Length: 153
Image 1 (cartoon, rainbow, N blue to C red):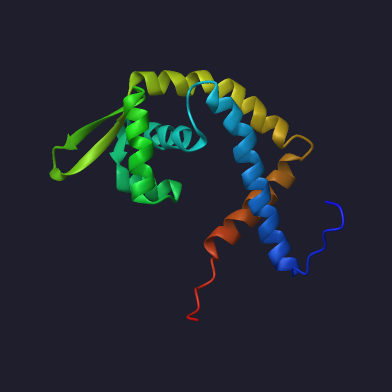
Image 2: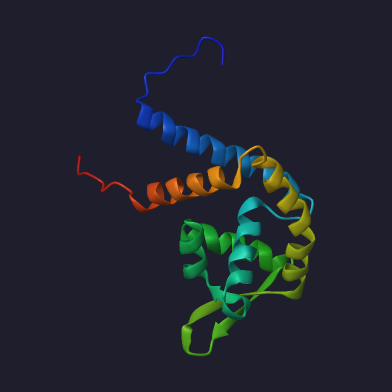
């Protein structure tokens, strides 16, 4: 990076490295999803729906799982619906809610992506032993669970 120097603490360097690794993964894996007409966010929304009971969930639940705003998720859902990857239907138990339901095209597309995506993930983490991967995953879970409380300014 040339003559760039930073004055970050070790803790901040760790967090920034996590962010950079996530952004790098998102960018590179996005190339796979684009081949199937999906963005990274659209792929994740389909994965969430596919893992949901009966392949359906509310926009609110999907957006919470993905850590995105409801407004952002609404746009993602509209584009997925327009492309035939999902459809919307009213919730019979609460008419105020709309359910997102993965379509057969959405399920088939996830299956088509699966092998290439799995190979990409394996390559991404090759060189690490199962023990190292387990330790790293445990540490990341601790970081996620132990989010600091926001302090008033």
